[in-house]
Image (cartoon, rainbow, N blue to C red; front, side, top):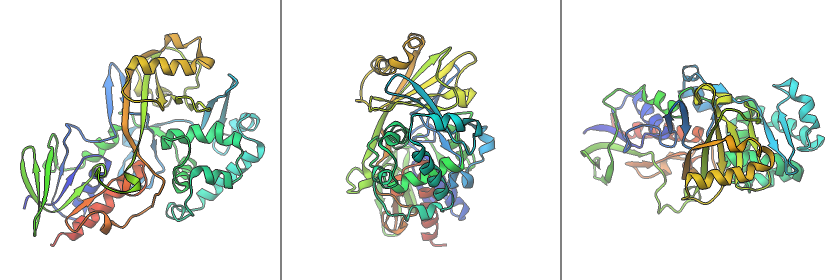
Length: 413
């Protein structure tokens, strides 16, 4: 037997599954078809710029981050809580969290985004999530986020100008059909922590996890061709040979033939520009209400200086638009829709990269905090990922931990 457990896929789920099996005292191998770890946590460094594959932030209040990640070692830097909003009339406004930024209180109260009543409801919602555990939030009655916001009495102004673009960037859908449980959970994470970027980009999270593995455990550039179940073991046929284990964890995307609401995926397009100057605030994310293809803009070096060389800004623009086009096409589209607010500076924005990501995030209309691992496959092969629980880095790492613990305990001593 080559291992007690073989884990297939070295994204966040597979890495945590592997670490969990090791903690349980079992022999494990981790197979990854690419030449790097991380999966959707990917960062490309070119000419002093760091390009994450899709605009992402790390929510440092995630319980899994506290459990598995040494955040100080990542040298993270944070965006300020709040948002800069480009209003439909060509004006702008900035709102913040007055509980953590008292100097933002007056601006936030005077902002045309939401009524005074909306802002009181926000404070009430903050109290609710801060006094409710994550697990209990996932036991709340499940409905769409849109229905939840209506039931809480938020105005259409507040929903359209803030919630749709802000959570559209998190959920990758602006109709807010995502489960209200997911909304409450992420709202709690923003209320209790910060949105941060590691010095080495999001891939540094995966690399830190991988650094804890013994060298003989991780097998990169190893494609899995077939998984064959035998009576006493499982054979994993790879590009370099056949391996045997008592248990296999498939820490990959859900099988294409799985009839499951979590097996559908949401897409996005991310375009990066460089500029020497911009009038956008550097430390908060900019939102575009109104349903145009541009959803948000972020000055990444405003939060984490390592993302751009000295004297340059790295500007991320997230779009909801058709796939398969060129950088020039997406750059033109982004500038066209940003022109009402930024026309004077856009000629000096230089397009650098774009990432067309068809499988950016699993759908999350129905979510759970902890699933029943015994139903994630069969007695020998477990199929897992954030799509099993709730689409997020928290869900990915938790799914890996649950699967790793179960697989290790299934192995006979």
